[in-house]
Image (tube, rainbow, N blue to C red):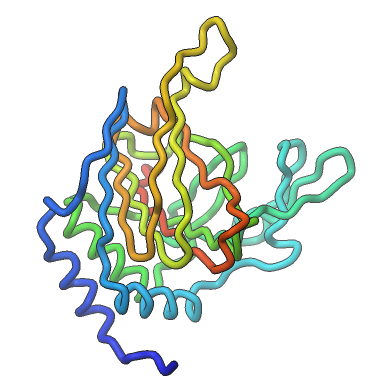
Amino acid sequence: MKRVKIDLQSALQLSASKPSSGLKKVSSENLDVEYTVLLPAAVADELMAQLQQSVEYYEGDLTKVLRILLFVLVNYEGVIRSVKVFGKWHEIPRQQVAYGDEGMKYTFSGVTIKAKPWIPILIDVRDMLHTISGYQYNFVLINRYRNGKDHIGEHRDDEKEMDKNTPIASLSLGEKRTFVLKHRDARIKRPSRRDIPPVKIELEHGSLLLMNPPTNEYWYHSVPPRKSAKGVRINLTFRKINLLS
C-alpha cells in the first residue's frame, strides 16, 4: 500500500500542542512515570518510515558488545564496537546509535558513546518533546529492536553525566513491547529483599513515556524478549547530559 504523504514537521508540532493532561500518571514507591499514546497512527507510521531511512545504525562488528565487560573496543566515533569475554564475542541484542549537541557523550559500564550531529527529523522530535515537557534535551539514544528476540536487560540510567532533574523522554514506534520496572529493593537477596511488585507498561506505536525523578534512582527498567513480536520497534530516549570537566 502506498504511504500517504504527510507534512511530518507540522504533524509533530500539532501533536505537541495537545494538553499535557493526556499524560497518565503511573505511581508506586519512589516511582513517577507518565504515559500516553501521543501520535496518531498515520503520523507514527510516517515518522518510523523516515527514521528507517535516515538513522544510521552500526552493523556487524560495530554492534558487537560483551555481556560481561572485560575488554572494550571503541570505534573512531566512540560507538561500541565489541567486547570480549572468555575468548567469545557477543552481538548486542538490538541496534543502537546516539545523536546530540556537539561535544555530547554518554558513558555506561565504562564505555563512552559520542553523539553524532543532529539530523533534521530528530530535531523536529526533540522540539516536540520540549514543547510537551518544558525540558531541553541535548542527546538521544536510539535503540532498534529487529524482532522479539532483541531486548534490553534490567538497568538504571544512573550515569554521572545524566541530569538528575530532567525526566527521560522515551518515544516508541512500531511493534508493541512490554516495559518492566523493578524496584531495586525487590532485586536483592533475602532477608533484605522487599516484596514490591514490578510495574509493567505496554509501549504502543506512537507512545510517549516520561520517566520523572526520582524513578531512575530507585527503579530498574527493561524490555524483555517477546517471542510473539515479529515486527521492528524503534525507541528514542531523549536525555539531558551535563558536560563534566
